[in-house]
Length: 95
Length: 159
Image 1 (cartoon, rainbow over the protein chains, first blue to last red):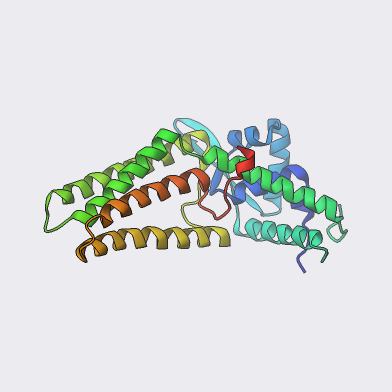
Image 2: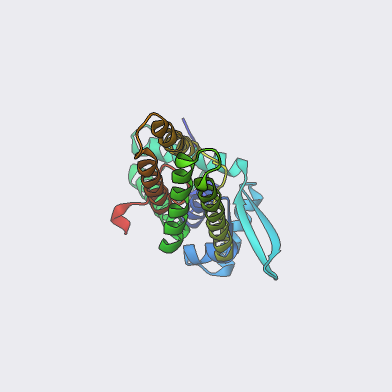
């Protein structure tokens, strides 16, 4: 049986992982607009995910301005997939 | 919430709905402008049609190169504009849904490219026309409804 992951389950972090799972990389500002949260709130959630090894944050200079690109790591993809499977099991009455 | 503490079915359902909503929003953001989708689809159609009609470096060989150039140009423009927005789509599938989508679309596009030419060589003259129209329509459909390159389609109810 799949296990729920507390790092991922918090609503904002769940949405961050969901968005990142559908893309290769998302920029900090884009993610902030998608989630409609402040810089500090997003930074806090990203730090938690980064510390768990679920995301990587790459700071690069694109178009002459610094930008932070966020991507799910393979560990993050696996954890997110397992978390979704656990949620589906609960809904199906197996949890 | 503790890792081992179970949540009820309602909460799990709500969490799955949040995931779905987040992924749908992202897919909508990934959608190309209609004009660019139409341009890419048309140029791909031109490529398929020209390939179907090409024989010993006739004029359609030129159409094939033009179609390929325009299609690659529109793909580059799509990648560049997405990057400006702060978004990079998966070019290589990273989950089962992505692999399945690439497999299905590759088979469909491959069958149309090969089939259009093969049927014309068998005497069905309109085959390249049909293959090109179907390829262009399919390309537009995939870009509009599956912009993330996954089987999961943007929900029509969310439009």
